[in-house]
Length: 134
Image 1 (cartoon, one colour):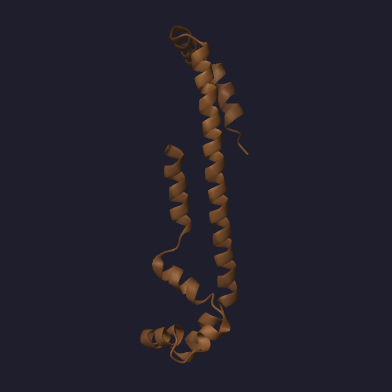
Image 2 (tube, helix red, strand yellow):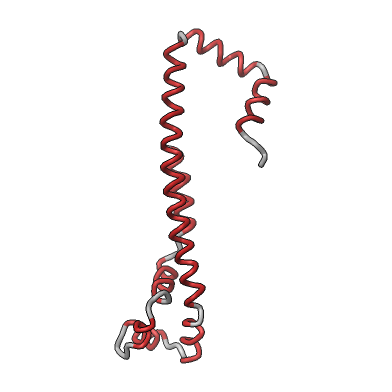
């Protein structure tokens, strides 16, 4: 559906790039992860060439990184909920539209469509009802 395209863009916008994902993961580990002499953290920091001061500065961000990782997970859950609710809403809306379409003849549907289109006050009313400024 068209809405999925836009929700996918929102999801993509929320997701950091691979390097940032790795950094977030790396800075959201238990203390033991950073203490292993031949572990991934120490090996990576040596290969990147970071000083002890730089390593400590990164590790000092662990609490903030953890909070942002939790936030990202919450946003992903909210987006999933929005996607589910939008799908449910659209299914209901399409069922209502189908029932209207079967209740009216094609000629009546065309007349109704033309009447709404030709009456600007009606369009203004509909726009104010369905597009609140809040």
